[in-house]
Image 1 (tube, helix red, strand yellow):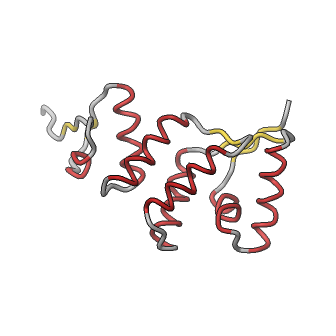
Image 2 (image 1 turned 180 degrees about the horizontal axis):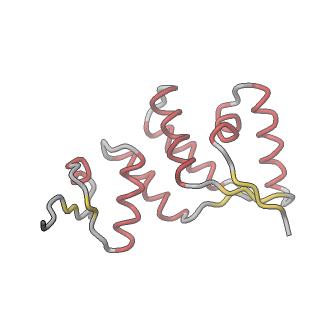
Length: 138
């Protein structure tokens, strides 16, 4: 059984964008180890969202490019997350609608569960299938 490692954002960025160079070399070796089954890599939703924020807001990548990078990461051999299908749907929402990835992830999970979202943020109304409840009884 291979050792399981949880990934942090800096490792993912090193792997995806190749900088800083020293981190990229270490990250590349880690992903190669995952490919050959020596380790299994796990990435949480929180780290995926943080990675998207850096790629999108800090580095100025287009939404579709960010989504492509994260989809490729999740499809890499030996990489897993809590729910690849739900996160993939969130990436579709992020790419298609003007919402941030955190809202897209929240929406994806709520839709999958058939649940409403308790939120005062009308931006969620842009995603088809989202039921937003913004008023509650006293």
